[in-house]
Image (cartoon, rainbow, N blue to C red; front, side, top):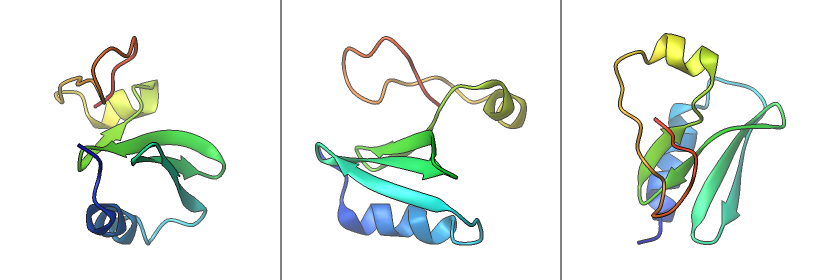
Length: 76
């Protein structure tokens, strides 16, 4: 299932207070960038954040999930 444009626009709207946010369509999903670096993506109408130390500090109890079947890395 691909992410709807409406959901992507909702997420981008929630991030509106941050400068330098970019979103790029990729195979029916969206990759999110902050100041030119990937920080997450929108997959199947879910916002997933890259599992890095800063995100782990802010999201200590959130579960890892796979953005799609088969990836070797997981996200929040």
